[in-house]
Image (tube, rainbow, N blue to C red; front, side, top):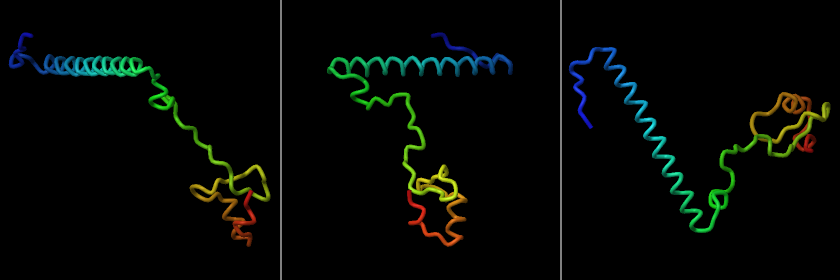
Length: 107
């Protein structure tokens, strides 16, 4: 590769060179990651396994919230529930202030 003499470049040319170099760095990183991914898949396949068997089958999926069943229910509005995790809902605090006990609000 030929060396680039940057001493004769003006400000705009130098900025252009820097941005092109950064883009090339990003491209090279993506290429390296793709090659590594191919090697990993080939190794897994050579051993007789699938990617999901090795890594649990959750690739690209996010866990959804709300997987915890409700523990408490609002007696005045049964559609309102609370799992017992996180900040207490207003209806829960209001029921406690009104003299109810936590065990009275259990589902």
